[in-house]
Length: 228
Figure 1 (cartoon, rainbow, N blue to C red):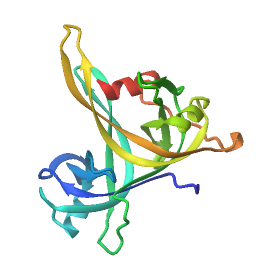
Figure 2 (cartoon, rainbow, N blue to C red):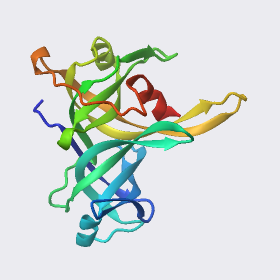
Figure 3 (cartoon, helix red, strand yellow):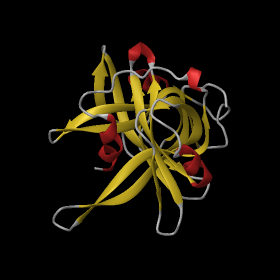
Figure 4 (tube, helix red, strand yellow):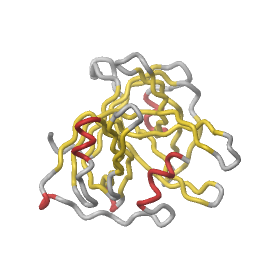
């Protein structure tokens, strides 16, 4: 696979009117949820972020179709005194139908592992490996993207180590799960991650130095933070 860094392509329907997210250097950014179909017929409900500059080109509201190209971004948010890693698809360009691809959800990442892979098998014997990938961004920053692999790819990923640099192709997905609380009740939650379809490790000499991990969320907390 070619060196791609961080690219995401999404096409779907906006589920709700855009809400103000934050302002940076005088530029306002808005958030919403995009409903993206899978090839299987299921759907993902994905958080996206857009700059006001893009909205000047094409006003968007609930029910609008959106096709975008950008990057997967992560950021820390302190909730109830502890850090949470949040993931969003950051739109850098809006596409028209002529530029659109058949696949409505495609992610390409190049980064380094920042925690050991977590390998397991389900009660039905399905093999799974969870990865946390640090992807360098401009100005000395990094995005930390949780990824999940399956089957033979999971067995391959289980042998990777912290610092190993990889390239992968997959899709950005939402996955519902239940969290068991201390009082015995369960809470419905949603995790956001990249479901990997192809994975390739780069040579050792091609590894890149990781940027500092934000103090609020350390590597061994990343994946559990996504599930809480």
